[in-house]
Image (cartoon, rainbow, N blue to C red; front, side):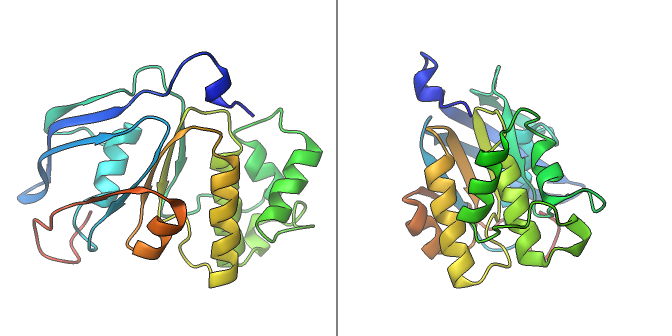
Length: 210
């Protein structure tokens, strides 16, 4: 696994300048300017519907901002965790993790699964996993991939307190100096990650698409 601190270059800051995004008449992000420090964990917090996921999708390149610029993404390989686990149901836990890192060794894969409480689960098909198990497999897929930037949307969603603790520790252990932008609504998660917190303003009615 790449530790970018050993690659001879520091991770770039991500800088948003005047980013705006609307869906029809619904304004989601308005004149948003932020700087996510390279090599740090940043948590984006806001109520549901305030645009957290939309912001992450802009950073992923899946949505285009209506106005403004995003700097610091050039040449960066992105590891993404979506709100949905997006596992292949017919593939095993190990197979899903290896989708983003074909060279991953058997010992490292098993060790990572054990770290999040999934020892022995490498051969289980994704369709057979509980929601919490699937979430941890999806998180490991992002963490164990060869990438420079982690964009994680509610990475601990659906986990009980013990498995959440294990997942937080795995993220901190295996981040390897990569920049991480984490969407969460839970201040305790941000605190456990030692993250810099950014709070988005609520621009529109709760419950609309974000």
